[in-house]
Length: 89
Image 1 (cartoon, rainbow, N blue to C red):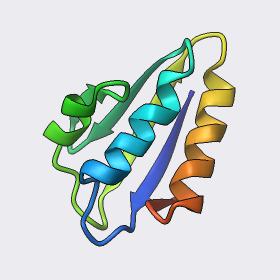
Image 2 (tube, rainbow, N blue to C red; image 1 turned 180 degrees about the vertical axis):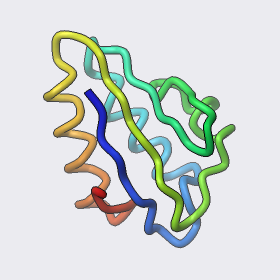
Image 3 (cartoon, rainbow, N blue to C red; image 1 turned 135 degrees about the vertical axis):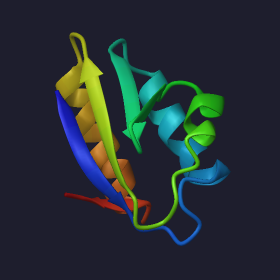
Image 4 (cartoon, one colour; image 1 turned 180 degrees about the horizontal axis):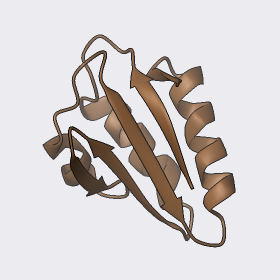
């Protein structure tokens, strides 16, 4: 399962929003990745997320696989939209 988002926060996925996303998905059992600019990283790894250097206005894809993947993607969508990080595409 996957969802696509446009990053709207002015600083891109810097430390604060990246930490928020990593903390959110760490509670789930499913494997989850973030893809930007043809590069992927484990969304449960803060260093992996920051290494992608996601800039404002960028399109990212979050993919989850596992028993609670649907719940994980719903929670990620909620966090991204409610915290002003981005919007679902």
